[in-house]
Image 1: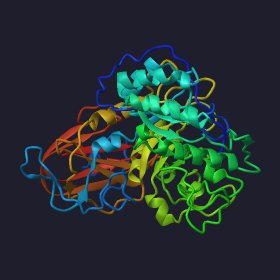
Image 2 (image 1 turned 180 degrees about the horizontal axis):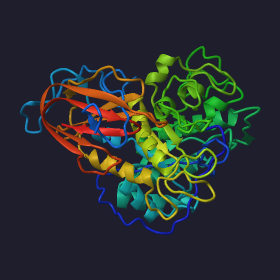
Image 3 (image 1 turned 90 degrees about the vertical axis):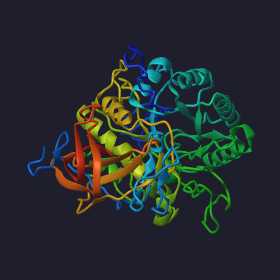
Image 4 (image 1 turned 90 degrees about the horizontal axis):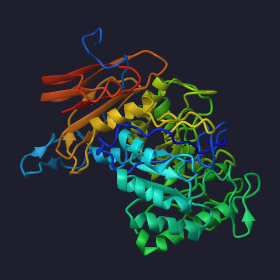
Length: 504
């Protein structure tokens, strides 16, 4: 966000729940953001009465097909259903919503940590990430801890989004070492130059005068990565908060500056493959309102969150024009910091955090974010109690609930996605859904409601035809089914503030 944040933590106890989560691939890490009151150079700012199935607390999500733009890898409905592994019958329905491979959603989940700052320890951090099913790590660029990141990859399959250390050659060296070990996810430009000035080629940026050094560095970093054959296919994430906060129109609100953009940097200047936001779900007001995770992830919303619109549409600091709303919907994008603390000013309870974070990962993916990094892995007295784990690496509710969700959805393979002909009619605006499919053909329909302030919604999932078996899971209640139904055409649900998963 626009305040000051940092990543920190101290290691004490190692989580006792090792990688019974072989479900996890690489993990994630987050680093400082731009809101006051948060960490370091990487850190955050901030059974139904009607006969339905009661899942945890009452509440409901809008499911179906009408929830905004498709998420990463989500087809538009024109893709044929997948074929069974044995070459037999088509898996799924001939018409309906096209699923997304469950592995794609699981691969989007990340977190921020402070191994590079010497605050978090590599081994317990890797164990914690594996338990939660976190696949991607974001950390500060520090060449002295490359071996630690590689060891985390080797023990838990974690891949690293490495921040630049304001040195192009130094950042490239770290990236090459990580990629050679299979541990590199992405290279990221300078973190929040509005909070942490960039010095490059003898000039230092200023949020009140010029971001020319930021623009030159990001341009040169992108060119260097793309010119390095050993880094072929590795994406470059944009400098966070740079577009929204630039004082002069150097065009950081674009991935590649288009013709006639009116920027001081020339048209055709290439900065990044992915837009990069710090759209903290807590927002600037720290209000736990309905649809908070959905709205924080809305690419076109000009609201309480530093989303794509104020970073890449119409910049919040200088009011410079960027992409049109239609382009923001399809723009490749990531959020490398988001979160909400559980102690201190603007805090929510650990229970609330756990439920909001489940909604957040699903909402961001559904609305087109390829990767979402929550700030941060572990609580730290200096940088704040933002963690999914406490100071001793024990899971908080958010760590446990995420473990439950990733365990329920666990899948390492992939297949051509099939279709499921389902409808959730008359759903309220706080209800959302995401259709996933595992590599064995099993569909997993996540339906979530966002009424954290209280209340519930009753919805019915119409499955179009009688289904042999539907298994219902609630990640706030564990990893085992809460109900198994046979020969049903529809499933009534009463939901409130977190997702449930229908498996069929």
